[in-house]
Length: 196
Image (tube, rainbow, N blue to C red):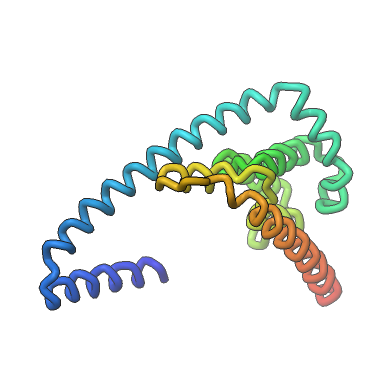
């Protein structure tokens, strides 16, 4: 859908620029936009490499193992299907830790790895398992203590106080996580009742 919407917007913008006689501003906006895209991409790429590397190192430390043990009861509640699968629960723990620490760029590959492992265990390959749905909901809510990606973007765009969004991010992500989790649990129960 977006593949057809964006080209239409671009064509309409160019046509309007030509008709309204703003060719010079249109031309300047192309170069300014390209420069901004490179700046933001470079900033995010550096951030992604840094945090992905740190998470790979952190996987081997006792700090992550302590956090994993602390959130294990929560994982058992959220992912009851995975009681005895330590490998997948470890991957989910790493994903949740990366999200909580605000390392969304590092959390994405960890989440994909967990989903891939869950798909191997999934009996019905055509449908998402309950655990896969719950992980997607938690990743979408992305509960964060330090939203490093947003701070990096705000910093690269010249914000005078890039960290001022921390408290609103806490409120928004906590509410999103609670509402998303409760909704997913209710819908999973309703679906199971209908299947019976």
